Image (cartoon, rainbow over all chains, first blue to last red; front, top):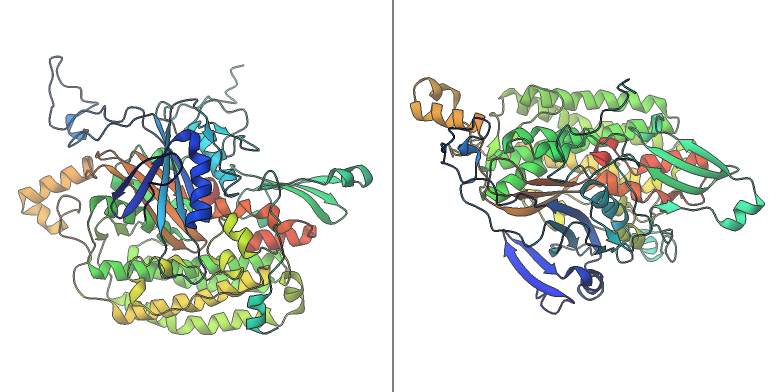
Length: 184
Length: 421
């Protein structure tokens, strides 16, 4: 399937049998409507946001020692065999789409992807696929993606008064505030 | 009505998805002025919520006029935790997400790792994975049926279903050594060979089970209370189901013939013979019928797996990702090094991103994995079918009675661990 005529089309890659189509963030809703109405992608499986902070910064394996000696907490063998391609922006949001036709044998799948930086608004696709409602709330809650035009963008899994977005790479594990400590 | 006529007739016309927020049903403002609207907190600790789900329900008498689902009480951060573990240690996590069809969850993640690694497990492992997936489906549906019927007052069914569920758990124990959260699938195949006694015991179960499903149906299908409380309740049209991302039995009960095992066959599902049950009324009763038929179809697949189980190795002989056999550790220096490296550091998975989707007991289970080429996952995201199913609460319960709310919620078959992750 050719995606070059998609509104806001940026690039497409075919890897491991999966098609990824990257579009401009600002034109996401146009692209989504086009895919639903013209290409039959009526079913939004999932919205997955990923944080690429620190991507590509891990050392390459095999370099154990340096001038200050060996850091036993960061053994070189935990590093990468080779460095991955750098990413353009910090966050990616992937929309996994499939065309549901009753009784079909085989159906195309596509990953619609956009890239955004911290605080950059992403158009909401709730008007295109109603199921995006909770998926977008989850991406906002756990990853801090700001969806523009979402009717009810509130936290969904964490408490309403939670601070920070736990799935970000700069959010430490075990870093939640201690409550009911009796210290107050 | 004949099947052909039912195929023609829509479940309802137009859409019932609330606007502007698809997952929240708001009380009509005119109604709020005229009548007494009672706001009730349903849950989070209510036995029929299968975990901890809170529904804020607004009632006009016994009629549900507004509903909002509040989730997150079981959020434990599985996805964050998996980023901290090496690939093969992270395999233990997905099972605990959906603790009723745990083998299928484990399979999704293992298939994602294998897709990134570009390896193909030996046929015996593929067929055994398929067999255990179907037993998991039976296990999950049995718990759904037992608890779902219990909530509507058919208490005896719970004990019958749990009797058979225990038989399934016995089979899991026989193969893997544990009853739940088995961690039997490894990247590259299975953790251990299949013990010889398993096939006989499994065949006994597969011969016995279809008769038991008939017994359950005999208990429910002619019972006036059951029919009264399930037929025509919780309607969801095919268009609304697709728009709300519903999959699995809920979608098939709305008349959509859609099963990922058939649409995009994974494992060896293209080599076994099974039917996809489809019903057309989109109500609680049809969702029950779909699951009953699925238990029979799963048993058919189990039978075929037993007949067609290939001989040969159960795991790849690739020392870069698979532990060497135990006995070699005493004699081979190289094996010892491989073992040490795999256990301490784990294997590295080439950089890339994959989305693996398969048909769990609850519908499309997706696993999105990003690797940076290191020994730990960069990002893991599960498309949890229970999470999506709860989005349909507002659409399905609109205008129903509060007692039906429990039947409808049960028919969506949500597991809160899966929903909140």
